[in-house]
Image (cartoon, rainbow, N blue to C red):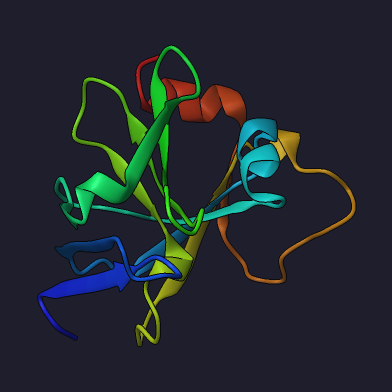
Length: 136
């Protein structure tokens, strides 16, 4: 596996490069499901990602503590960012054909609707556990 991984939006206007991460997380909160039409599948960046094509990135302040970004050209969702921090969770679908990825955890499991379930054996965290982890 390479030291870095690069992904891009559907039209290619935005490219994101970050140190390689081997885990995928899923968020079941209502805001993520509303944003993407289903659970958010993300890769948490180790460091602030390098974004090429910033002029094509739109950022939406979705709460007091977070921002969500998308490509202005094609609408591809790009990342979730905790304000005032270096925490970025990148959309897993931006990165094609990454070998060895592991589905690690599901967060806001207490918000997951009944109409879907993942077969993978993952760590499952409630809203309270997620907020405790991030000091909220």
